[in-house]
Image (cartoon, rainbow, N blue to C red; front, side, top):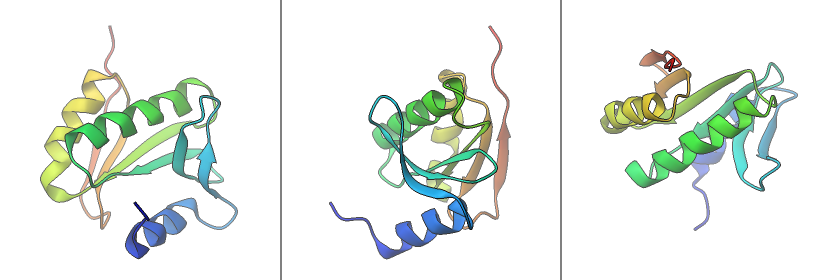
Length: 111
């Protein structure tokens, strides 16, 4: 399915000048954006299954040393689902709604 214009606009905004969109990880998965300061960004609108995959991609980017921080952007209705999934997969970072006004810090859960 082709990406929407708004999705592309959000990716470019998060990549900033000098950042990359559609960054390919060693496993072949693609990050939506990687900023020049090392922030990996995933934008997800497709519900719980998509959020699970996005969090896994962010975890891979941070654990492999490609990114120093993870940011997941989801619609307002999915913020609680995304928070629980980030905690379950032990991914710390920032969780925001699509507009960026609501920001939630997700601490990396220790063992």
